[in-house]
Amino acid sequence: MAPTVNGTMNVLKACSAMSVQKLIVVSSGAAITLNPNWPLDKLKDEDCWSDKEFCKENEIWYALAKTEAEEMALEYAERNGLHVITFCSGAVFGPLLQADVLNITTKYLRYIIKGGPDTINNKFWPIVDVRDVADALLLLYNKAGPYQRYICSEHQIDIKYLVDLMKSMYPSYNYADKFSPLFLFRLVDVDYKLGMNSDKLKNLGWKPRKLEETLADSVESYEKSGILNAEEEPCRVPYFYRMPHVLE
Image 1 (cartoon, rainbow, N blue to C red):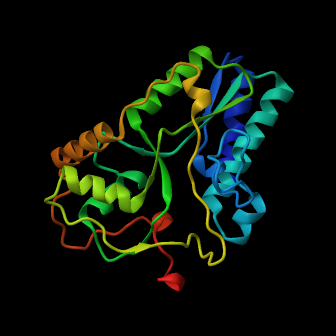
Image 2 (image 1 turned 90 degrees about the horizontal axis):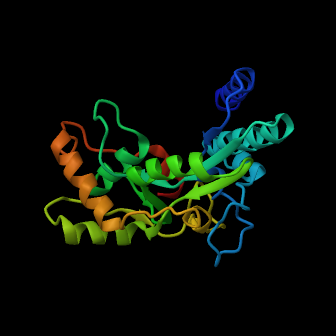
């Protein structure tokens, strides 16, 4: 957790020292979505922050680090007059820039396509195309005011529905088939959706792609790169998306 917070502070101080005019801090939807007190029937917007005590109690250190770093960045910006915008995206899918090192969401989508031994949480996940992320960052740099927070996530989708959609588009793959219906992060008594609202970003002129285009371009890119080829070891889902053993 400390590298995330301290590293962000180092960048902020360097920007102040060099009189940087504008800075976009790329945070994460994880700094927004983990708030069990938010109304279940309402998509989370920029006013929602992940509950830090909730994250500590359930050892969700990534979300805690992202939340603390983003809070600190906005507080520093207002205190020091630095034009800072924070940016929180959902799970980023889309064509690969390179295939030597895969990020966590690419590994997750690959697992959904190939299937494997792990149980995954059947939750409503926020999804966005990597090209729409790039468009949004440029848009914010040119139009967003200081000390503002923006969500970048167009599609909210149940993972089982996502699998069904992909099967209809690419029926030849095995696909994940082990889902947990209710639980997340070792919790047996709390259920919540991770969906987010991007209306604030859309009001600036953001126009994201359709989900089907994102999925099609993702699969074609994965096929071209070879990451969907057969492996000696079974494909595994990243731990962040995996059902913990205690609940399997």
